[in-house]
Length: 383
Image 1 (cartoon, one colour):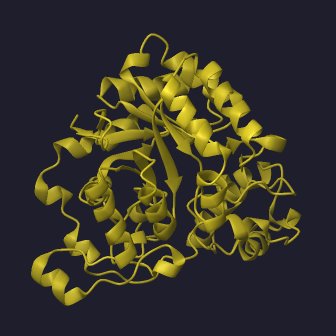
Image 2 (cartoon, helix red, strand yellow):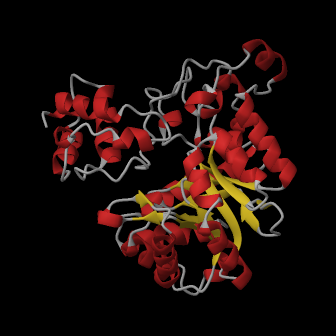
Image 3 (tube, rainbow, N blue to C red):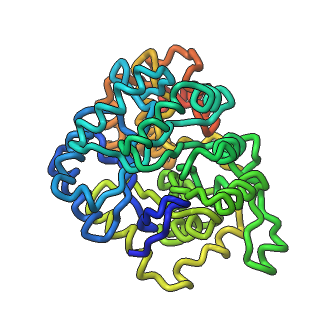
């Protein structure tokens, strides 16, 4: 494993980390297997944004006796009120969930206390101009957290966060598709193809390029989410590029942005852990993404990352699951795989349960047309 120092903290994280999202809803044995494989490969950074007690307890058991080998990103403001992922800015609610994280993980400290999902101007003021900031600073003084960070998907807001001088790191979505879509959609603009071919240097959307440089300048580390764009960059059918990228190319792209310390890869199995760390053994030619980037084909707005930041849903729809099965079905409309139909039917709620309230679309950081997708799911699956 290669390690990089996170900003001014003096703490070093592996360039490949483990995103915890896929650990949710797995039995303990599988959680233990994935985390064990990660630790065996030198991965030492684990993001735990999930608010559910069961997954936290599983992670706590899996790292028992190994706590000194794990750096934990724990989130302040991630809740599961009404048993759905949600965001809270209420101080007492945030305290309750963060303190329960310590108990569930059976630890007396969290390495990085991350303000959760700070994307809009309101999010910024609700966190950095409120008692939440004081709370986090007090946790740091007491040694309950070692550093303060924030997760964000918006480059303008992320810059404001960095400029506060309060955070030591920021968790930000970095991949070439996002870096080449318009700033107003929080993703990127097309590259200048001539300069790319001449210099093999990316000319990404200016506010994102400026953010990466600012982080490098201010010694604020970036830990990366959405490195693989929810797997879409690996798929010939879903990628916006002329051909799919490899895992190594996606990781290399993120790691070559200024300020980036670690790429947090969501893994569903020990084998996927090994595939991710396989990056370390690749040659420079195998890591090179320039020939793929130069043939960028389109805008990436509206693509679901299956992150469920759109929740809570008043109809209790698992929006990410519905959209995932919809995306798979759309690849071959004439013959939807029977297993996809079965998985969709097994969901507690379906597209037909959508009441078109629009709350999801207001929350989505990627401008996904959720209401339209729910209607399309009904067309595909009949419910």
